[in-house]
Image 1 (cartoon, rainbow, N blue to C red):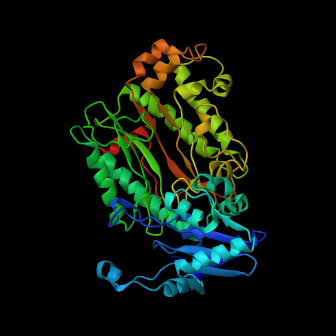
Image 2: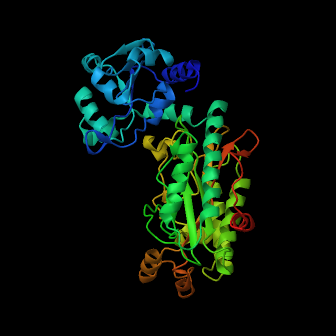
Image 3: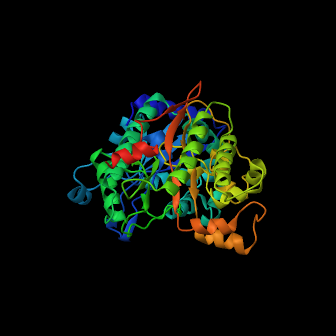
Length: 460
């Protein structure tokens, strides 16, 4: 937890950005796996953490814009709880640590909100991503769970995005801690990977490093010899000679701040000649994207530049032909590069994604529906204090290649005959984390091995 003035100032700034009414910020509840007492690891809502800091289930924060009052609602634990949890501070004691004077039980919150509704007061809430919070809004405000997103406050969303996307120096310290631990995860994997190992062996090591550092992983680990599957949740493959292993993982600090890195490494002592060719195309796209980072440049422009470098590399291998700009604008490049270039990062690994990409990444403007670029999470101009990832990749997805070939997609550009030989290649991604500065950018955390030479050196 930061000092109490941090949270007082954050709530003050949020209140002054809303015209009138009540700001309702819901924390998360425990989530059972298969029965009530067998629960998943608790993760507090990130916006609640940002303004109220408390990593405890069952809490709700209120900011009364008109009366300039802050409330914390929740139920105190009983002796029955203490038996299993140990002694816990009271709600009022917790509230004091974050500068909140007004507290009450959840039943009092129910009365407070119903009274506000009866008086016709505006109640600003965020789009809930958990079913239990949708049900709460139904009980409190009479909003059908199917329609909560429609009634979420755009005014509140925009105000929170404007605050949270500019990281303070204190936040950057936390993020760098997360990135440093994330680098340790990747170096450990590079040193471990060898034929005969299971994917799950590396996943176990990654979790161990995150927990030893006092935190956890910031998202479900991607650790796979099938790098062409962008979010692969399966860890049951055995590594063998000639495979490449893609690791996409990051650490989360005790305070909830995230790191997010990707590495691709050979299972053999060295990359093959073909693997090196594709790897260096990805690396060139990665490095050129980094060089473009600066305030004022639309992230979409960096994405298009990264696509152009990938297309030029694929042209050099005879896999695609034609004018590079025309290929990218048509969307034909997405046969190799199907995802976006990066995203914001902070308390969420995809920062504020629950608030909606159209507001977080597009300034309220509509996203493209074209395959490939529709997966770009961030398009708007960069500003100092924003933390972003850079993660271009090249992925040979057999089902996509077969489908586009059967449908005769982009036959003027794509050499499908030659592409057949690459269908079992897999995928390559490199990812690092940066903060935008007033003059350009800064790499967050210590350096991760990313050149072919540096990756192979970890295995020697």
